[in-house]
Amino acid sequence: MQIVRSKEELRDILAQWRDQDEHVALVPTMGNLHQGHVSLVELAREHAERVVVSVYVNPTQFGPGEDFADYPRTLERDTRRLKQVGADLLFVPTDDTVYPFGHDCATVVSVPGLTENFCGAVRPGHFDGVTTVVARLFALVQPEVAVFGQKDFQQQLVIRYMTEDLSLPIRIITASTVREPDGLAMSSRNAYLSEDERAVAPRLSEVLTSIGQALQDGKQDFAALEADGRDALESSGFRLDYLEIRRAENLAPPDRDCDELVVLAAVHLGKARLIDNVVVTV
Image 1 (tube, rainbow, N blue to C red):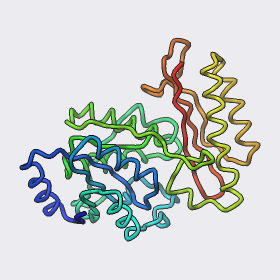
Image 2 (image 1 turned 180 degrees about the vertical axis):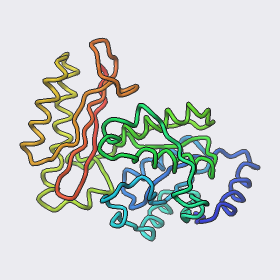
Image 3 (image 1 turned 60 degrees about the horizontal axis):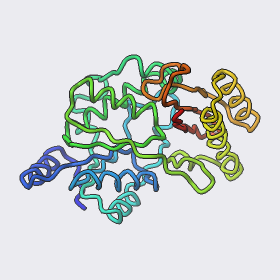
């Protein structure tokens, strides 16, 4: 596996691959890799001859008081894991590579509408940071395929819309959420959980799964299902940002004619902010 930091070295390697008619898949990450990230790399391998994984903790998607300074940076361990799983290239760009004119003078890519609710409402500016850095990584790597996880449901939907709206020749693939044996969605921020909090954390997926099962069973009182779910989580010790049932295609409010719904939530447990979702065909 090759490790590069500059755009010049990256482009030289990409040009060699494309001279050999090899397609490129990109897996953007912020590092501190776990088995969920490994599954993204493995899925990317199914769709391209070459897999690039980027590790970059993007400052523009963190708001004031969030965990940018404390976000786990584990590059040495990440490098070993990516070598084991067979990634072709690890791209670790510097700030100057990603933002050549600095953060304050950077061109911002924004997706209106989809970014104003849920995580966008409680983390103002977060999705502008996400779409801006992903657009920059797309420009640097120019992949044919990019892979994101379903756990960040709103994020992958926003990136899909951005890619289509800008007519970028990139196929976005969403990988299923990888979970611990007790159902907790794998996340780099799970490391913030204390032992007692870790024992409670799987309750989030249990509640969402229960709502999903009720929807599959034909229940359509969406407001009541949401209220019951919120009560169940709060009684378990979670602090809620939101729990909502929405149309999976665009996060619009559901109606009785929806074919696919998503039950999505964001909660706080101690220092950790956890997000999860369940997609349901009805």
